Length: 511
Image (cartoon, rainbow, N blue to C red; front, side, top):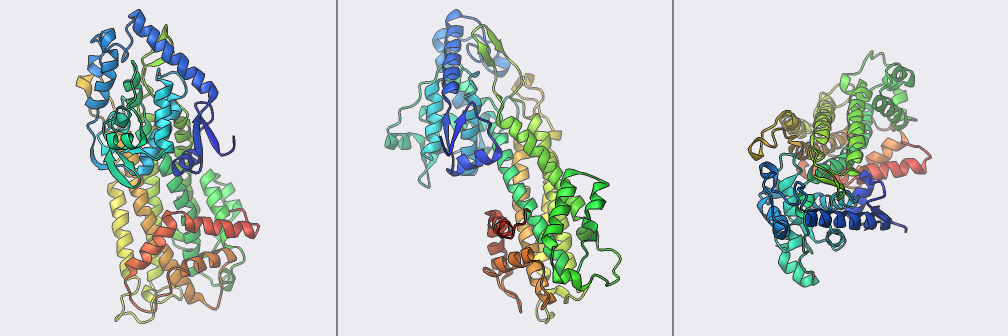
């Protein structure tokens, strides 16, 4: 079926997960997955009937794993776990994160080894399709034993509790269920544990970060090339032969992109014999610095897509007689790459700020502070204060959450990942990075106009003109926050990169 994703059997990618969350792709439970889900449901029922002890089916949780639960109480146990573990605090996560949590939870449970009922998964799918999004507090997970608190809040609406976002409003789940004529789900044995055990909170933040950081990487190359042009830098350091001598994948790609972005520039040709020996590192080393961040992004994307197609709850039910209580819920495999990507994203902002500073110095034919009448005017001095503040804020966010572990569950869960904090921090760093790139783009567009009548390459002139549709040249001081807001929006919503890439395709250039 066109424009459909099959939960449980198809490989979920970052792009597909984002598309389902945006409503441009519809997820349905695959027929083969339905069979596996029903078999796993029967296996759990057989375990309960046989009296065989299996963690989370007929025992307590965590340190209470050795506490037996009677057959008549196995269902009640699942309701209690959703309520007792709903201890999240802080602001609600963005709606898109909560939707990604639903999507990734369905896909993991649809693998058919978690013992959940088909009707429960169908209700989770209905939440996605009808845009009934649970309200999930952002704090409370230690990133092991699963993202317990966030996932408990995510699944409270299944039993008529908690809150949801519906039609733009935050409402009690019970009220919305009444409107939609949904009855609360009757949970079976093991289901409550399967619903809250898993890494879907960490994973959803990772998924969104992969998409957002890629957009920033693409934008940074374009904006960095514009700054280089405005500063009459050379493209010699982007020579393919140089990067073959140190063949990191990200470095090679960035150098190639910069060569394409600068191809055919009149500005570049005008100073080819100017005698300047070397450019500052923030211009000359873009392939190495942007490229290193790309390498970190590649690593994060690879591991995120492994996790997107993994089973991360506990215990796993292979059959009624074959269950394993393991540690697939532990967030460490995602926590480490998320922290690595956090440093990498911060460095992309750091080098962007350095280029903002270079543009202001009044060197190489540019007016100081990018304005002719300074003194009366402050010019572009103060926007760089903002990039400096944001860069420092990002540095404070770079302490790796995964370096810490605090025991929980009276020592039963004695090592945890804190990956939930890693995922949230990375997205906060990207928030700041988008603002930094917006200020560099604002400054580069101002600076490049001092090179007239010379023109840059077709691609960079298009990028400049696109910005000028929204923000004009500054002859004198004005409220630059308004300009930053306009340009930030076109970066954050990916419009800037998409427009430049679309123009490149029209010209037959594969960026």
